[in-house]
Image (cartoon, rainbow, N blue to C red; front, side):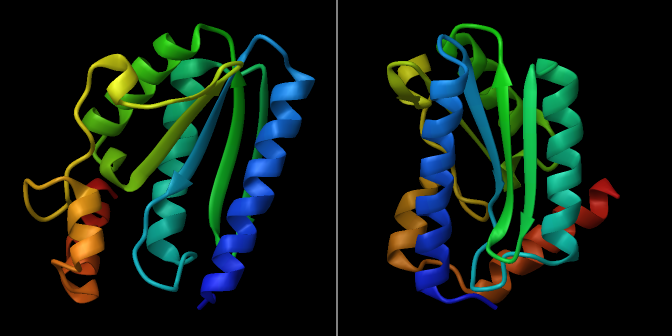
Amino acid sequence: MITLQELLDSRDRRARRQGELLSQFPGRALLCLTVQLPGPEKRNALSLCVARAGVEAVEKLFNPVFKETNDLETGFEGFYIVDGQPLEVKKAAAELEDTHPLGRLMDLDVIGPEGPVGRADIGLPERRCLLCDKPARYCIRAGSHTHEELMAKIKQLVSSYE
């Protein structure tokens, strides 16, 4: 279990690392893989299964020129420097999120020299909730679903994949 402060500190460290990598590899796109898992437990058998599947899929699809993965108590994170225009990389990443059996549990952020590239930048709607058809951010803010409901769905997705 992690605290909110540990999660926030981890995000700050990840943002700093992203900046370092963008400086080291100018003109290239950075893809950052994290696992979406609700609640204070960010590292467990479920998250590690999603992380392994994400690493395999990302490395196969993008053939990165640089990779770094970190298995942390605050959650898995993978950094990949890839060739290609950030918009094209985001299109491929969004397709992976939308089509991979565990893609809904992966967060594939793309950052280019001009900054982050979002789904709206490539003409896609925001991601949907795991349990209903509403935008995920709406359900998260409203607390529309219980932690137990979300974890049951995640366990179902992972067990179907394994």
